[in-house]
Image 1 (cartoon, rainbow, N blue to C red):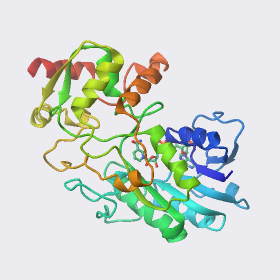
Image 2: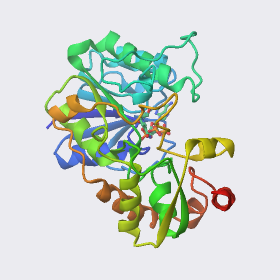
Image 3: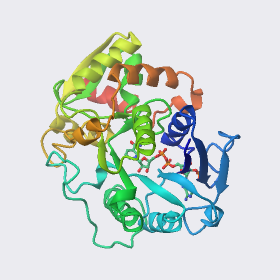
Image 4: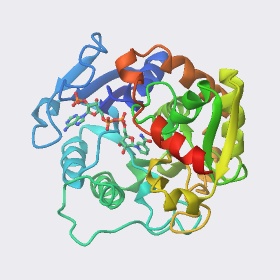
Length: 328
Ligand SMILES: NC(=O)c1ccc[n+]([C@@H]2O[C@H](COP(=O)([O-])OP(=O)(O)OC[C@H]3O[C@@H](n4cnc5c(N)ncnc54)[C@H](OP(=O)(O)O)[C@@H]3O)[C@@H](O)[C@H]2O)c1
């Protein structure tokens, strides 16, 4: 049994990690502000504080490992890693593939990382998120050193509990049937990581003390938009007819930004879905069949209240899709 501290632990990926760690017999404690899903884990020790200058609750305790899944601001990661450096022997930092400098190349873990001109910026935006994650990694490494640190770089995390609806949009929209707009072509690659596979691998890293940096993705080139269409139809049994449109059509009609998960195989993000995962696969990252992810995501979606499902947080609105379908 190991003592594990999760920084976060309520959000999206946290609960999956908690459940997996408890299933394996570990003792888990959490650190958060008590705002998100307060009361989700009444039986776990929860330290209340804030990554922003309020870490006192963590002082005077010891853990075998810390999993940091709420680190976005380099200063916050520097502060927690410094404080916990003597209190825990292993730090697992959940970063992102957004830490890479460019998606014109198929990145592996040694590819150049994103940078930003002013490293003191603390506002998380679409532009700063990636470079800030890269800096967070650096801060964790500064305190824990390479031999006590694991960095996980997930691509789009999806599955039950996803608050972004980016992957969820596709099977959920498919449920309604009819003509449905799809971007690019069926052979375009996409990558995801099922939240449960990420949780399993993160607890494997703790259990087996696997250190180093790992992209956590489905194998590059293996999962395509065509597969996502097939998964979506299979798990919803819906009579949906895909209508494929090009990136230029989407761009001309101001819709590209509403298309989640997929990126055009031409242009700035042409290799975004070809991130190498061999290092993690060699250490045991196991991706479940994508159809299982689709099935469980739809089943989870059906349990949500109507005010949550009425307007998905990603994807084309019904009006915009109808407008585009009329022109396609
Ligand atoms: N979603 C994706 O597709 C994706 C892809 C790649 C990487 N990632 C990474 O995966 C992680 C996301 O995990 P998530 O979505 O489950 O978590 P999240 O929503 O970012 O974090 C939620 C957890 O952190 C706690 N928290 C937030 N701000 C805090 C603060 N200032 N001080 C203390 N605790 C705080 C929350 O509890 P309280 O609100 O109660 O404090 C909650 O437990 C992030 O590191 C993200 O960068 C996500």
